[in-house]
Image (tube, rainbow, N blue to C red; front, side, top):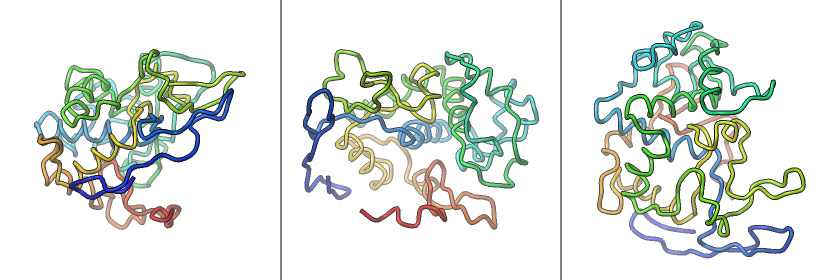
Length: 269
């Protein structure tokens, strides 16, 4: 797919979306597990809308909105530090011993302790965005998937985007894993998000190339898409300029990666 801020110039599908048990062709409407794109397409956008509506402030401690979160030396972690991966929290929750359920994940998050003082060191962390997903719920009163559907995807016309695709619609989804002798269709691949029942701030979103193009055009047009304003131009600018602490080489916007030593070829095909 090739496009501009105003129009899609080229759209075509190639290859197969599944190889077993039979070949299934890729189509322009094939839906994919977006993995960590969930962080920016869903969670970051939702958080920044709440900032615009003065429901959140970026430099407030998370504990201002979620008092229990401040336990175990997390009281100083700010929303900005979560968005930029400078919170000091480790990459993800332990998967063992076995656990399941969104509420169990929240209890495990509350028990976490920072590895580093907040703001002192970069460490990419799914936990950061699991926290932000819960924060959307606590501030808006809507679970992350419901909030994003109502305030981002439906207004933009992203009709093939969402968490936990209904079982009857899996025929257009690319399988993400071959597990225990079976293909996984329409279920999030990320193990933590899967244990969080498919809706998490760091992973779980499904979408198509066409819907992602709509989202990208919204950003390129300063937050305006499908005739509606999703974000203010100043918010889009803040998301895409360095927000890392001074002197850090890992440059992060709000949610978005801007420059990283291990991603120097990110613009190459």
